Length: 274
Image 1: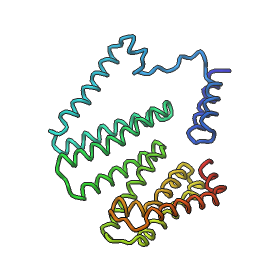
Image 2: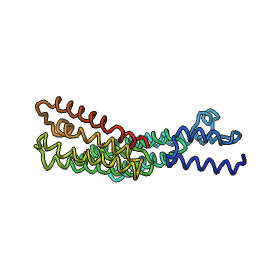
Image 3: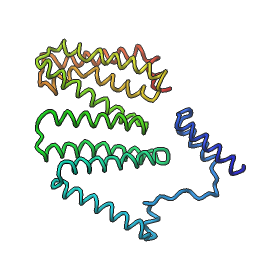
Image 4: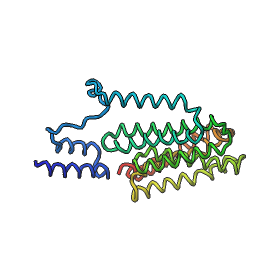
């Protein structure tokens, strides 16, 4: 087959992969089928072969990156807080940029970089709060809101459902904190009214996402299951309130969730698998 036609077919397969028209293993099979076997595969800059050959560029760049990392770790506490925030955003954005660059070339490495950027964002943000002595709730709320916004946007651009779910989790925490301030002594029944309608609403959004935006169907489904058990988590973990017979109530909710999922299995399995 001519090289131009082969490249056109490979571009089409890549488009099928990005739009999820075909499963990943089908796309891999077709790419291996039409890839030019004589063409030399792209070489990674940080590969064992390049290290073994003693490329001075690779070794110099590795030394620079490692030195820069340890410089930040050891002197981060001496930076003024604007420089600390700028450094945290620079490191995090670099991880996300690397994740976006390798999104289709190396999906696993891209996911690792996105996860590293998310953990660094949360960890360095918490570190800044402790270093500056911002012990009030406002700093924690701003950190959760900032992480949630960045994770949601990163999930949209990188198309990683786990980042979208983490963004939803931040929204759930903010919702819990807000109503915890409004109703600090809320009863178990009131907590059910605060959380269960949201759980059912997100379950409906799972169906809507299946028709409109299929990538978010699994995220909405996972968030819906999380909200189903949030009344008990809110009471036990956030409010430190333990009602009598809470273990039995949690068990009954687990049974109810399994019963609903079993009765609706022919619907939600289709929503998630398509």
